[in-house]
Every structure is written in structure tokens, then in C-alpha cells.
Image (cartoon, rainbow, N blue to C red; front, side, top):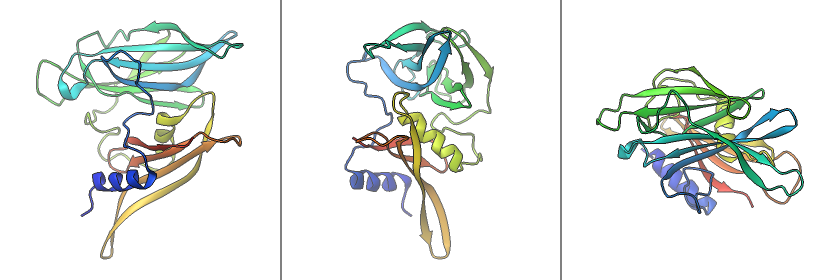
Length: 236
């Protein structure tokens, strides 16, 4: 049986790009940073900008204590330069208390939130905690719920439905730039056929800018079982 890893390797060779676990370019960042996710929009009065979520530490697989920070990024209307307006810790996730996974970021109808999973860095147990955190204006956020426990290497709870709406949202979470709004161009199911049996492996989601231009968007793989996205190729 063709494994998901083999499927991704084949897709990567076709696309001519290496497999990437994040759309973010980590060059120039503090080497302690294990994950960076950015996107969404916030507004407060005349100010507006995007969110950035940063996890410091080696990641939960290495059992290194992590530090989580949420940043509110603002853009200068004249120079288009970006800067951090404010940065905040999450009170319910104390520094160094957990080994944290990559955050899973999602925005719907103007409301943004992220989910993150943590395990105890002092043990080898995979059971841990997960948090769903709602983001608002600068420095404002709240833990809205602790969702059903998920495996730390999965992006959805086991048995959850991974449909076209979900996979588009996952693809946007690794590619979308608020300066270049994207839309789904195509969503293609990838299946393996064994005799008369068809097994869904995942989805290939192609994203394009909402307005015509010479670049932007990309191709994202979303696994049908884990719900996790992987950037295959960024269109330039």
C-alpha cells in the first residue's frame, strides 16, 4: 500500500519543491524558535494589523520546555513596514510548563483563534492538554475552551470529518497573507485504489490571489486522517 509519506514525496518531486512544515521562512529568527504562524486580522480604532504566534523551545517531540507568545503586528500606512505593536504570554500556559506543538490557526467570519497541544516535558507520556484561544485587539485574548484531546501529531480529534471546507481553511492557515488575500482555485481528492476499494489519502488544495497578479498562492497537501497541512509549493 502506498503510504502517505510516499504520496507526499511524489507530490514534492512533481512540484519541484522540498516538503515544508510551515509557510513561514525562519531564516534570521532566534534559533530557539520552533514554530511561527501568522495571519488573520485585528482592528482597534484606526489601527489594524495581523497576528503572529511564536513557540520557543525544541517542540514537544524533544520534550524541551516551551514558551508561547502572541504578537500583534501593525503595518505603517506609508512605508508598509511591519513592526510588533504588542506581545503577550498566555496566562493559562505558563512559560516552561509544557512542551508545545505547532499552533493550528483558523479565522472564521472575522474571528480568529488558535489551538495548541502541550505535554509535560518531565515525563514521556503522550497524554497532555490542549487549548483553544480566541484572539481580539492588541493584548486581548482568552481561552475559550479546551477541545477534545487530540494526538500531538494530529490536527483534528480522531474520527473527525475532514471535508473540503476544513481543508481549504487548513491550506489558508499555512499560506494566507493579509496583504495578498487568497481563494481556493481547486480542491482535488487523492485516492488509492486497491481492486474495487478506494482509500482517501488526502487533498491537494491550490490557492490563488483573489485579484489577478504575477504570483502568490501555492499548493498545499492536507492529510485526510490527521487533518494537517503541508506546503508543497509556493507560487512565485
